[in-house]
Length: 189
Image 1 (tube, rainbow, N blue to C red):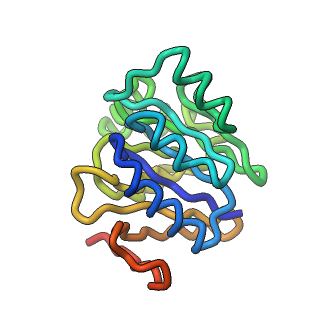
Image 2: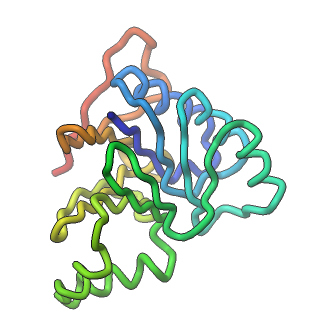
């Protein structure tokens, strides 16, 4: 199963729609948005595939927005992290500003590998956004992935994760890309 990963759309619904189109062309069967959604129009752009998301630090989520997301078939977060299971793979989704995520980062920075392994027991992937920077880092059994951002980034990027092969690729998003043009792969330096 291939999962499309996106983050930090900050209300840029046309760019989000272009990103979703690219991910669909690449074979994504579901979408995960790692926060800083930016409103209803971005949520609308996520509805062509089963989609999960978390709220970011710039989102102003309220009961009506969560209800709207459920009404259009999306899966708003219930807890932090948003835990999703696909093909027996466990994915924890954060935005990256949450205290729970910051604790994981502190364990990484301090070299507390045993405590990190205990905190991530059974987790295959930790997905996050917030930094607007592409990242792919394996920490013990878990892989930390940030797909980049669709706002305040250069270039704008999304990720595609193949759960069957553990292959991860990043793709550039250009709203002006003709529909018949192939997507452009992004290779972080």
